[in-house]
Length: 380
Image 1: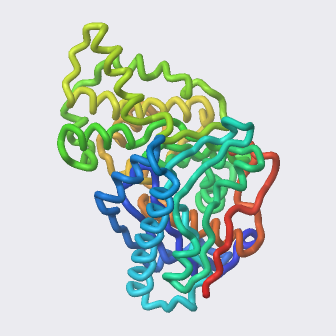
Image 2: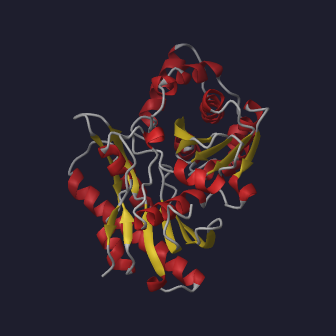
């Protein structure tokens, strides 16, 4: 890790496809030891901003204007997190080398339309630098896409640096809105890809039927019965069988995607209660993650889970049931809380930029080669 990153204090800011808000960390990299998280803050997005970000996932009127204002709103939400982190750690802006800001993904279309495609993460980096007085590194994914890659996942390089162990094959499973797997092979090689839905469909269904943003501990799903017909229909989605490199998001796994399979199952005579649909969606997430492990990490005996899904007890139980030969644990077991991993990863990516070291893994994303990821917005 020492040769790849700049040392010192960095801030990482992550808001994922689950749209549950922003996780921010103030982290210290020494280059010799595991990073030290000095502070961690989570703030939710306002309901108004969540609705606008969801709307921007698909075509609509006056998109350029609305996206620009949403980008400003994301930057302001990020700036509030930065202020809270500095106060919590009693650190001044001048002591922080840079902020790694992921931004909010609203479209992810690598390789489509014109052969290059695009990925779009909303965050006005210039405004964030202006509000915080700290250098901002943002727009990490677009350079990998420009080089022919998927632009995702970007965390496997960090997972290797943080969790890799010699002669031990380990899986790192991040379950946010989308689930992605990093395979840290025993020979030192690293691979990774998006498995499929994580929490995104379960959260949507829970909000629709329970008025809650997510199924706390998976208790609602645990009270239902898996509908095998519906599950089988959803498992036929072509994305699951596609080989890596591959990545996905709300562009595919969204309410319209779910509705088509609900309609197909109903037309076949299935009676679908809301709680049974939730149970089935939970099983779908566990299944696509387990299938990914079975195909690409058959020798792994340890699966470390991070992201919001690590706090879903029912999902973790289903993963453990599907992977009886694998120890399924939270990344907390190795010293990094599950809800901090991705934010620390983007602080790490900012530190690789400062050291002018590539942050992508072409074997993971399919890019033509290693690339320095991100764009710098200097402080005033």
